[in-house]
Length: 73
Image (cartoon, rainbow, N blue to C red):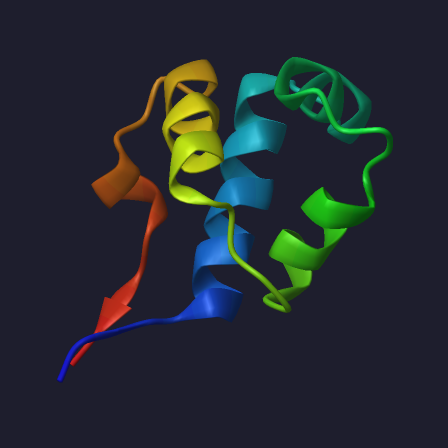
């Protein structure tokens, strides 16, 4: 059964943000978060973005949701 690799997905988000020059502060402001704690949890693979936030993140990074998610069989 396929599962989302949370750590690899978080690494993708971090790398794509760095590539695009988007800081954690910019991203949490875009998403309306109070601080960057949630985004750092994504980076570490401790949690995943909710689907609505994932769509926003993908859009801001000029990526698709499939580009960001890492699926393992």
